[in-house]
Amino acid sequence: MRGFALMSPTFFYALLLLAVPVAVTITFSFWTQTYLDLDTTFTLANYQEVWSKPIYRVLMFRSLTIAAIVTAVTVILAYPLAYYISFHVKERQALWIFLITIPFWTSYLLRIFAWKLILGYNGVINSTLMELGIIGEPLEFILHNANAVVMTLSHAWLPFAILPIFVSLQKIDRSLLEAANDLGDGPVMRFLRVTLPLSLPGVIAASLIVFIPTIGDYVTPRLVGGSDGLMIANMIQVQFGKANNWPLGAALAMTSMLLVTAVSVAFILVARFLGGRVR
Amino acid sequence: MSTHPIIQVRDVSRLFGAFTALDNISVDIRGGEFFSLLGPSGCGKTTLLRMIAGFDDPTHGDILIDGQPMAGVPANRRPTNMVFQSYAVFPHLTVAQNVAYGLRRQRLDKAEKASRVQKALEQVGLGALGERRSNELSGGQRQRVALARALIMRPKVLLLDEPLSALDKKLREHMQVELRQLQRQVGITFILVTHDQEEALTMSDRIAVMFNGDIAQCDTPEQIYQHPKSRAVAEFIGGMNFLDARMTARNGKTVTVDAACFGRVEIENPHGQDFASDITVGVRPERLTLLIDDNDRAEHEMSGQIVDASYYGDMTYYSISVDGRDEPITVSMRNTVGRRILASQESVRIGWGPESLVPLS
Ligand SMILES: Nc1ncnc2c1ncn2[C@@H]1O[C@H](COP(=O)(O)OP(=O)(O)OP(=O)(O)O)[C@@H](O)[C@H]1O
Ligand SMILES: [Mg+2]
Image (cartoon, rainbow over all chains, first blue to last red; front, side, top):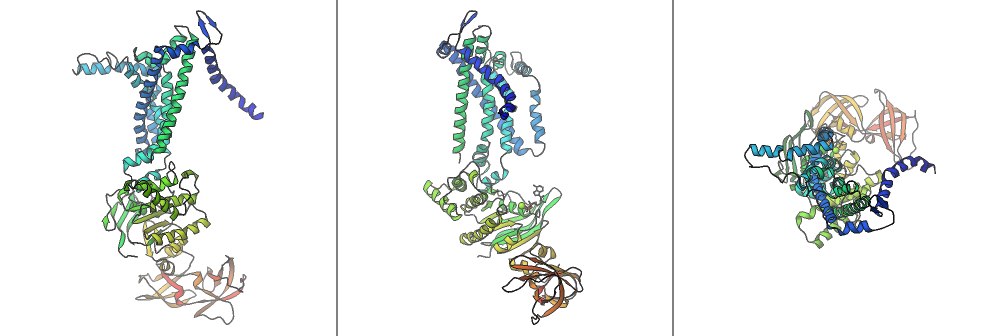
């Protein structure tokens, strides 16, 4: 009882911040919006709508695809950086890690606007290429579409992905690498058979850290995504805002939450399985 | 045992910045022998072993394995395998997978591979543990996995970096015997790094004693123990009484010394060393005898008084003060049936012969 009393402040704090909002969202998702009022009779109608209307399916699928691409791009960029710092920087590794985070001291929104300036119609890339005469008119495909979302988000998540990978690489006992060498492996085989499997926990952590918030992001798609870069979170935002249909928004939110959970669990299982098969 | 050197270390130095970890070392290691590198912490044993394995390169000098210069040959192409001090057992693999790790390049079929792994595991007494994860193993079992993993490669030379230092005393002594038997059985050259003198003495065919990046003496265990070249070697291996003496004559394989309380004696100089006229003479405690009965006799005798007795079970070490020397002399005595332990203050006679004395540089 005493233990519970000691624990309870943090417990209630967590309850308030996590469980209550989720519970409220779940409850809303079973209600119906009737113009200005809420009909509180239990119904699955919202979920039926979410699963049957193509627009939601398209958005859901696009969100998962973009999040998967962002995750892949981020982890593939982060791994070599983390590897380099862990294995080739002999002194002041902490300083390097610190330097990598510097661009992230500015606000998230400012960084998105910076990307708009770089990628935009009259942006840095287009005007430079036009000045140099490489292109005649501004490139369209780099802003207001899914590519721009991938680029912006990958950049935003990079340091968060570097850290867990770096930590897992740091934890690898260097004599294991020498042992692999000693037993006949060259650098490539040694990487595939020892370094990569042993850094897998870091890669999994990094992937989830990137994947989960990307699904829920609605600011980046709104600002750089154009119409074919819009994602499910934008639709949820619309339901809670302009459309004023909270129950439908809640059902969309719950559905995407379940999907993210399912995809994440599947990802962990597959990664573990593949990792366990490396010999 | 062949006599052609499997490993030749020629004038090898290794500098880390301004620090000299190995200073112009040369040594030949013969095919099939059990060779130990013995020395205190930081003397450069691991550094030398790592250069033979190919994890590090000499700053100067060459290492040849089986007559081939090893400069520029990476560790994965050398006919050596290593048992690491930390064992370096792969944590993400099972015991059998660990042992099979190095077989990948040999492209064996599954059955052949499995049977070789099983054989290697049985060789080190782990036959039933193939499917264990390596984090479910004890220290001694890990050490055996590391050993099996290296032996299955059938290397020309097996390098062992303090493989037993993490084990408790009982297990360590057991493994010493096993390792030695295994080495005889497989006939592979073993190079063992250790800072445990007893381990080196009991296991090796030859020992190189190292201090501060240099090999002080390279010889058989008997030679190292009975005829250490220098005081440092003698001090590192076993206990010894040291006496200041004057050398009065040197004659081929003997020197004549004048040592306090031993008088003038001609003693062997088996290494034919040169000495300054101020020389140190060493006497092992078991090379002196206590003459307890009145009618016990020895070639030479001196009398003294017991200061202290340390009882070790099988042996007793007596500190005995003698005339003409400030420090007591240590004499050891086997506790045979019926022999009593002498008490402090008792007067005794110490018997010795010229062969008890060793000249040291
Ligand atoms: N990479 C390195 N950089 C600088 N100095 C080093 C390096 N490796 C070893 N040394 C130094 O070289 C000396 C010899 O080291 P080494 O590891 O060979 O000792 P050792 O005889 O194996 O000792 P121990 O019994 O403690 O393992 C030590 O003084 C050590 O500090
Ligand atoms: Mg060492």
